[in-house]
Image (cartoon, rainbow, N blue to C red):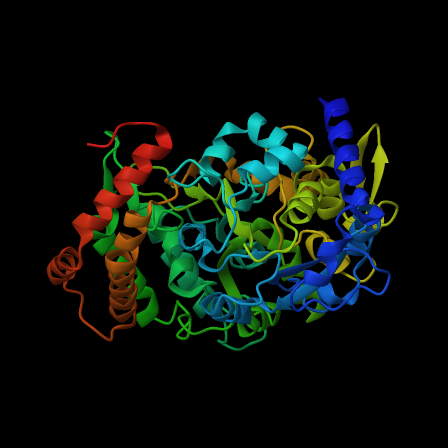
Length: 533
């Protein structure tokens, strides 16, 4: 297998370099809106969210992408915006349907509409003729192949694969263990225990500054962050958004259950007693990080890989004892808690129909997405700097794992251009699966926490991509229904409106819940290969 991949990788680089010999040079001048490459290399325009390590934009000739350009012979013309601006900017460009880039991040994770409009190209023939690594990966991972295909059976976009990090970098609730230790408390495992811990954080000055300035619970991403507590009442509210199959395979809407009402009442109690940040619904990413680094926050939610970043911020602010841990998910009423795992894919990328050279675009994607050589660059960074090879496998250097400038491993890699906002693979098996375990090996504390919560991780609902009709149902009924639910829950939690669960249920039903459930049932059945009723 390794020999086959090496041959495939060599073939792709040779294929790209053939273009440099003049085979397709006539297409260079047709790159709409693209400045001419000074050395006459072919160019690809790529529109995506700018680097999550904001100090180093992709436009800054970062080492990883400098190396990609060197190995493929293709000039990258970056068209990037910060995360907060990219969606609106890309949607505007798509609405005009002019001057589109060759490859772009699809806003709203919605390849269905763009495929229906012909904005993005079908990829099957392009892959078959030009992308041996992608073709091989999809053959070896049929579940991923199935997840990427539209209802017509065709593949129109690629997505990042995260099956390898779902268990090594879980998403869950985290809190300050040093605060627990200072107050003589144990890690909470039920809603009652969480309430007791948060109340102690508020009243007993765990940050030791003599002020009652602690924020016991500050959820990231607002209301959605609170939904992780849903496991205490059996609700799959985070990634599944309340749509989850029962034991018979029938998709239900769990937000209408009496148990969901109990959870909302518990949130309302936290808010009314000042245990939940008063501005949690409007907190910006910057102000969130500022509060955490300032040593005022006792509990939050996020990916486990953020733990070193939070601790680093606390220590830079003078708190050398700060220790963040991921907790087991809250359970209750004789049931264990759970965290839903994300994936298996995330973030979609297409090739626009206006691309002058889609063959070049798919060859370039084949290199960065599914070749072993390209995968090492986007997963591990630069050989000799962030990783070295040992026994044929990459491992992170001391410089990367314990960076002298205080960067945790994730931020260090992103500063080099790795872990990009482009399609990349961290699989659960095979040669494209090495990075997640290498990251754990570099962080024994994080590895122990990942192992602690692993028994509590379950799959979220898996749905096939919608048909155009199912997409219409989502837009006409699903989106307004979700907006009503989110707004009403926020009003209930903050006390702006008294909880009236019967009226809540009637309104949800009147907004077309049956139609939404029927559409999701068809998507669920199609994904698992079962006939819909």
